[in-house]
Image 1: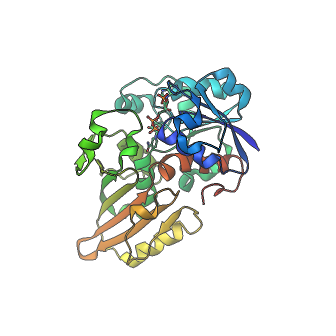
Image 2: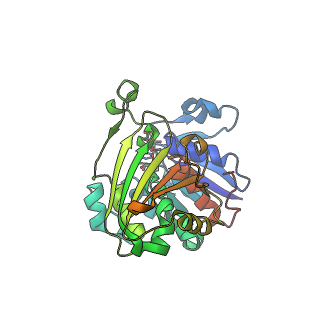
Image 3: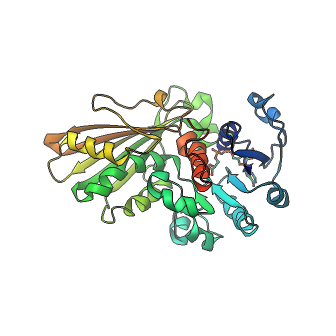
Length: 339
Ligand SMILES: NC(=O)c1ccc[n+]([C@@H]2O[C@H](COP(=O)([O-])OP(=O)(O)OC[C@H]3O[C@@H](n4cnc5c(N)ncnc54)[C@H](OP(=O)(O)O)[C@@H]3O)[C@@H](O)[C@H]2O)c1
């Protein structure tokens, strides 16, 4: 049994981590904290009434050190990098859900997050927590940079082709759509029901901080892939990400062969489902789950492959993947509390 803390429990991702951990047989939540939201958890999230007596407190490093073996940081970027070095120094392990430790150089971080990184030594040491790519490294790591929601869907979708047939790829266009919980629980005019409802729009076009994350981790398996474009859109729904990924190939492709490659690549992965060629993924099949569903289609005459990848942004795109990483780090059953 390990003792676990959640910082940012009053936010969407932190709440989801708590929801998953209350069902976990080998992890006990001993400490929860937030910034402005304090008091009984059931006053912050009424659905936890009768399920836990945890009290949410302002973050106190000494308490966290005393009460926990491992901490989930479900806080905005820049907050994580202030807390993480102190937690690691005290011997705790950290799973950071923010973007603070995903991009591996200070210049890349500054370019996309518009601020200077303050913990460069741990930036280099952090392990990117995509189990489908780095399971062995995650087992040995004490700092996990939990992947972003859009990169999770994109990378799981693209890894099989990029790993086995990168020379086939001319260009990749990722058309991504996310539900509004992806923006967190903070108040914002753009996220009001009246603005979102019956609306649909692109945002941060070619400027989203998840674009370099996708480029970086695809380059680990296919260094020559250059032409990758990513455009996010905001869906008027609560949760879920659907990415339609257009891959232009420079040679004739056979959809059946590519489907076989995908099935083989993810044969032993507990949370990736490659759909039959007659089916396309749907958000409702992955919402509230840790699954990533992938569908494939092609126009063989035009050398065009279209992948569709869907996840729940708060589960496989955040809290579920974070708990999966905790399970791997502790040699627990990888699917514990996630199936
Ligand atoms: N939402 C998603 O789909 C998603 C997916 C992947 C990754 N992420 C990442 O996960 C992190 C959390 O996202 P979220 O969407 O859950 O955000 P959120 O709903 O806005 O929640 C943020 C949480 O952080 C707390 N917080 C803010 N400043 C803090 C500080 N200085 N010290 C301690 N706690 C502090 C807030 O507390 P108060 O309520 O008291 O202000 C709140 O509990 C972000 O870095 C985000 O990029 C989110």
